[in-house]
Length: 299
Image 1 (cartoon, one colour):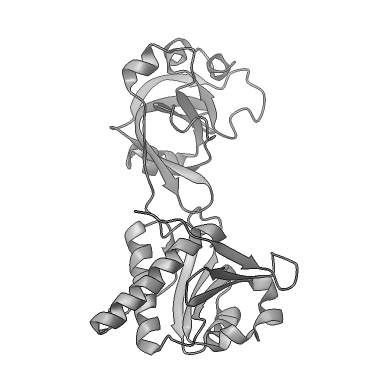
Image 2 (cartoon, rainbow, N blue to C red):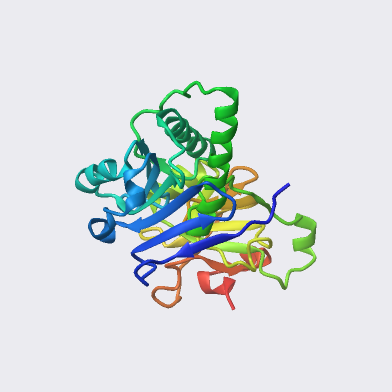
């Protein structure tokens, strides 16, 4: 069962966008979060000379999934110095070391392996690591202690806005019979889709991502409709939503369909105002069959 715990954040410079020192009560570790912009200013922090693991976090181009590089070193400073020169994607570095110098090479290699393996299993990020280390052999007592250190890292990461090591919990779509008897409620989201994404994802993968969904709507959406952008400029397909789950680490979501998308008679853009379908919009499924143009779907 999850247990309550206390985290302390120390901001040495008074600017939380530069550096944070993370301490958990009754833990032998220390965490640091340092922004890339402040790395050269803070790379001589004493903790960075110790053995530990680190996670570089950022985005490549317009990706919705964050990119991570996970590494370890007897002194993490030199490793991150190298990445500062050769890896442009990362915006911040998360570093975890021992407060009592208790981590050795075997421990940090195991932690690196565990973090990479966990990230791969969760599938919520892209890894910049070219190889995955093999699990190092530890004695039974060493492994128990290192697993506990790893679990403490996992407890801290969500509190510094990194959730890709957590399992994406799905929200099941509401029962169809309930949505049919409550037609005054919004139960459908209409999303704009460019041709490539529409065919590859909406039709072939039977899902849609990555979109923001209001908190009050995430447990109400039962249907999704696709508005194909120009030159089609019309709503052409819809699907039933089976579940919704977090996508990546940026507050966006993935909608999984219960089956293949179904084609409908096109609902053209018509006299809608310019920009009306640049983002997702909510409506009622009951309106879909009678709509003659896009704005018929919306109040």
